[in-house]
Image (cartoon, rainbow, N blue to C red; front, side, top):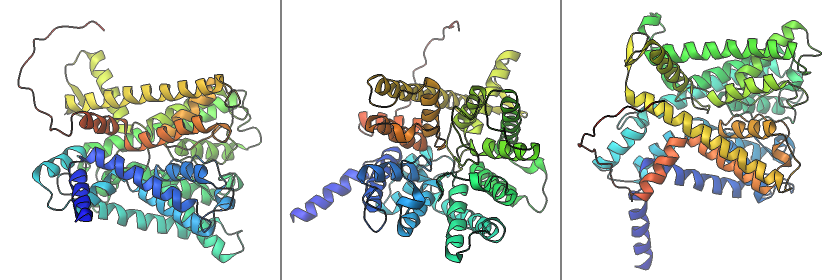
Length: 467
């Protein structure tokens, strides 16, 4: 009887959780269990304790790529396989998976929960999570398999051991598609800097993973009679913005590193510079792979600033990357253009964008900026207290954006941080992957004890505010 009462109380507790709260709780539970598994001798060497396992598990689940261990050396083959599974869980969408699980955990789902799920996961719709998730998983499996085959046949051909070659191809294909940035080698992809096949396959997987399932599904649905007018506004906007950012990042790095004081392109020919700039520009959109040493000594400050901007923007909604998303940037730019033209409505490609979308874009951007600044301030405090080796503010801000946008670029700061600084990065990675608005929504609903938001029918008088 006592056991049954405890079970019933537990069921009553998780039944009251909304999707944001359920996602946060499930994410924390998965990180906790993954930490314990990674710390076992079967998965790691004696150099990996609970702290190292916690940081690695959080980075893997949030598909960030920041690490304080050497994956190829400190993790056994079983640990590497488990790490790859965590990358799949995090990359396919923690929020989608937890919502999919909630349909099984909470039996007899009532209307309120269904409406809550539809409100929070508007890209899936009420009751559409399962079918969409299966489509996402199938697409990911096909693309990862194709990438692994190409890497095995034409990329990692110098690896003599067949088993190591197969595993390296599969692991890096999974990591690239999920925009994770984890590699089996301590120098990431620097060894394959001049290997065009490896660079292009990694770029291809990163881009497809970052576009989002809506875009890939729309492109596949219109494959037989392809015309850009048949594509949805979301798809056209994502493709246009992604292409613009790709060109901006590539040309920007070519200019800043060719004219600046950095040594990024010092020993490279012009074709190699182009490939390296393209690779780093794509990887900066939340992937985290690098084929050149990345530090304040090797790259100019203007180049670091450009990479920080690309990291902060990130990938697209529904993709495996982080950041504020390309559509958020597009909505803000459209709102700015409408303001300059004196228009009352925000219009993109002859389509009016609702005020709700614009307000959400503003909320995501402002909340993300404030959160990153708080992270950088906390790292500065830990540096001022002498906990770590003093770093420049640019290095700390770069690391904070890399963690929050789930990129994984590191300029040599992460491993030298103390526990307090690494906790800041752990929290930043978790919040960045879930989304700042989802976390705030979970907190708000907890403070209001999960009560449904009441629509206020009272109209308030309008008054102008000078800005």
